Image (cartoon, rainbow, N blue to C red; front, top):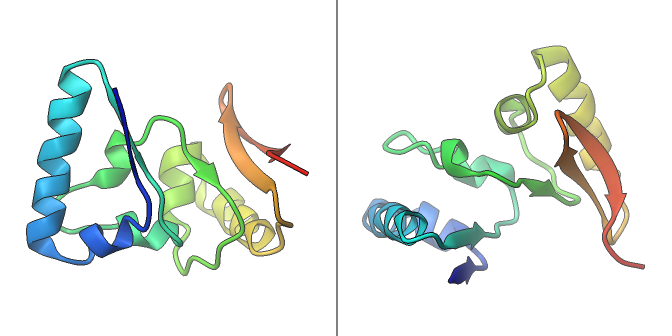
Length: 113
């Protein structure tokens, strides 16, 4: 089972909905499924009550304008300087381009043409 939630920031911005999302992620993962969260900014996942970043296994970052490099540090195993540089590159991505984790480093990938 794979559950895809687009516009996840609508869930993440509301503490009641975020709690439901957290429970759903745990339940689906415990039964061997996966939850895909899609949102317009990595900043949306930075929650005080629950660390949604910790649960992300396969981050894909398309063109975005995040204000924090925390997401990149945590999910791409970068130091602060590397994350800040990648943050600048992310704002310049073209349509269909993304950074994905390959092995132990972020790689610029062409998802579609």
